[in-house]
Image (tube, rainbow, N blue to C red; front, side, top):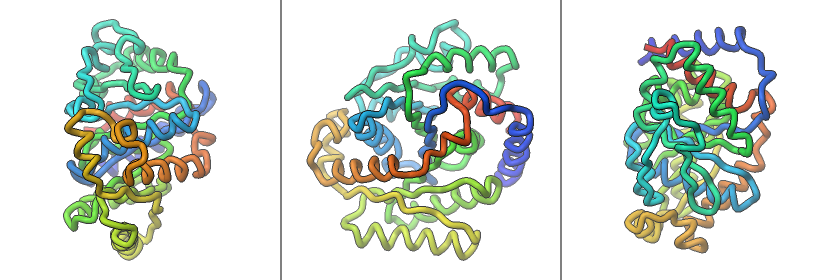
Length: 294
């Protein structure tokens, strides 16, 4: 894994030298990651996307997890087509985009994520051009896979903002630290924002964040940033069972209010999109990194 991450840093630097940022409309590209599964990463991605949409943003969620099952769990829609069909079956982006709740849109990745590593220059350019047609997007949220892999690292490297989701469980904190360690060691300029999910109260959220922050400062001499927390709420589990986002089912529950607070915090962050390009630049960078990482 360390060799992969080291290669990632080298290829990111190579890509920056080779490419100009003078591309299509700039958008905010946010990678959402977690050190382990089961922390509510996808649930967070979908619900915060809804909250950001309610604030007037045009939001696109890219499901970059190979499993795809989480999309079905959260919004109750099974994708008929995925990124694979765009790459190999001559489908357009509009053919695979899912119209989600409250006006958010979702691009299902599926097995197409894995095949990004095998694209030649012509295929890479063709895919980027197709994605460029998604011009009516202000915020692109990348719901990455759980854990540390070349896929996750590549999406984080290509994005201009990163959110790591953890819970108060010791194993979750440890795994979150492991992910942050790899990212900051080889992409040291990357700003890491942290969300603490499934907390009993604000005090537990603060204690969890400080534990992670102290560890990162002590062993990595880096800073991470507290973006908020989400309360443990029985209505979240109920919404998962009903396959509807809790922001839609229970807009006034404690978890939904926490999501709204986080969405406002995201809106208040400096606009990192000013230093990067749009969707085409993002896809070119991702596919380039995928092709270089082994």
